[in-house]
Length: 102
Image 1 (cartoon, one colour):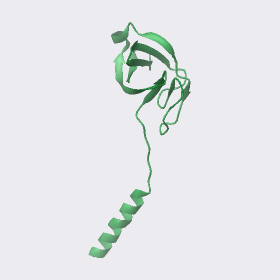
Image 2 (cartoon, helix red, strand yellow):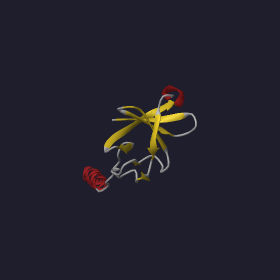
Image 3 (tube, one colour):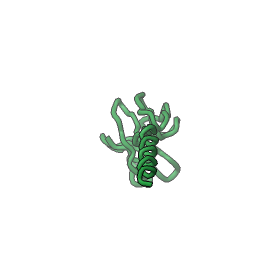
Image 4 (cartoon, one colour):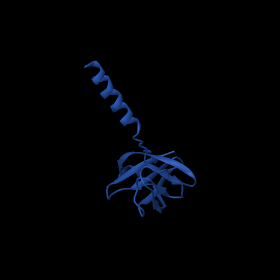
């Protein structure tokens, strides 16, 4: 009985080792820098934000974006605004921005 349990445990461990998952955080590339997605905020908190462009390419979630204004979360065409030197904002709907920080 102990041998059967040990064999099942080894088989389960071996099967789990063959699964390869790769996932990145929510990333946006701007001026060659990676910005990491944080959370949603009301647009009113960043009334001073200036538009800087739109997302040009959405990569697969498991791929690291590398092109200017590309993202592995945001859809192509999403408006991007700059709040300050280290903070970008993605307009996700009519009321909220998603914050991205360096």
